[in-house]
Image (cartoon, rainbow, N blue to C red):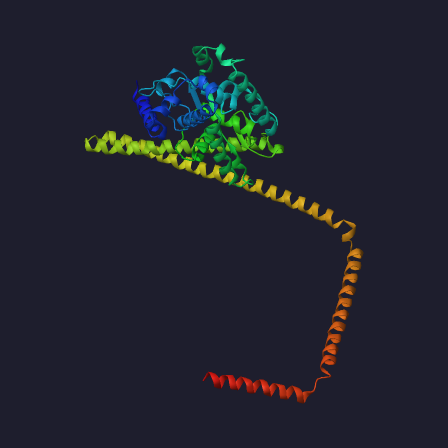
Length: 429
């Protein structure tokens, strides 16, 4: 057993031992029992156990805890997996084949070969309501038949035969979806007017996808990249792949590789190669510097002189490559600017057409506008006349209401009130 596989096994053991279920022997015995039989005798318990195993297997893949952890999106169902999950006092999980079988039926796992070859989206299988109803009807019917011992689909297949049937490689959809969601979110934050940020090579896409991982610690294999590209293009419809060119485009009209896309791809690829050359040259210069120091310490001046000459040649080459990179980067920036200007100009053109169409409507013609404004003005003048008439009438009513009041009587009543107030104040003091 290699050091890497030992570390992986210890990591898995540590993960499992940290789960609350492993603190209870009866619970572990239930989880590691033959779930095929439990499915018939205790459906609710089976559902709970299946949910637990689904979560554990997904975590096992996402955390790279398989013995062969080369892939980050694939579950390898084999004897090594069964052995890795072995636990003291309960042994290997007897229901692992049933778990894999049901997760495949539910769409949580997809056989690797079928996933890569199929042209039909994993989400295209009828309406949600129809699928749910179909699943509920079928499961309820078959569970009732099995519970009454009238039929037993699993009974005709031995445990060994079932294990042999489910062994293989599976794409874990939840893990793929989580990473895809992060990539789409990161891409949405970029400007759609910058064409260079929508074009990737296989290598640059791999680095980009790894950087988008929620944990930023994922390392994707070539197979993982192939799975991710298949999912994003076929199932999420956010990119198109043609040869080595990868292009993000959610608009169906843009979901094709044009000559402009190809040109941007070649320019970006050249920039990447020049950057790699610069990195290699800088490493070589550092190496020559160390060799010069070592030669001088050994009093080997001729060797030091040769290494110095080599370093000068590398420095000259480095200057050339840096200038080349500057020129290429400026060219790419100019392409992005031109693409952005073209998109903005197209938006202007569309806006002008829409505005012209709106202004051409009969209700916006000058004669019609003048007519409407005249009527509005007349209406406002009429409203003002009514307001003035109402206000004047109100004052007349007020004056009429107060005409029959005797001023002397009001004065006497007011003096009485004042006198009463003074008496109350005196009583309080």
